[in-house]
Image (cartoon, rainbow, N blue to C red; front, side):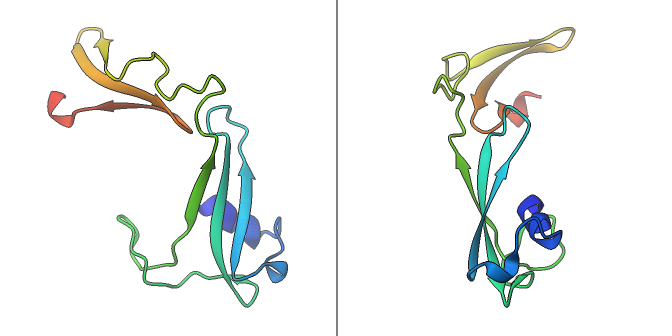
Length: 116
């Protein structure tokens, strides 16, 4: 999650006034993303970049950033937009697939890889 860290680097947030664990609130313009709060480690007024946290796809260990999604479900309160746990998704000229549709922070479709 680079947005809160970048906000500190470009001084949208003043790291020198932050405690060791800073809370950076990010509001996104995308209507599906809502609000997140990132917990960023701060050392001597700077974002702590080194650590022993390893993330798939990242070359070197780094510090961990914790993310809280604030009210990620739509205003109607339904995480499953169709009201069903499993839906049938029809892809023209391909096939029909059993999928799960979730809207919790960002609309997402889950499909079993072996079905593809």
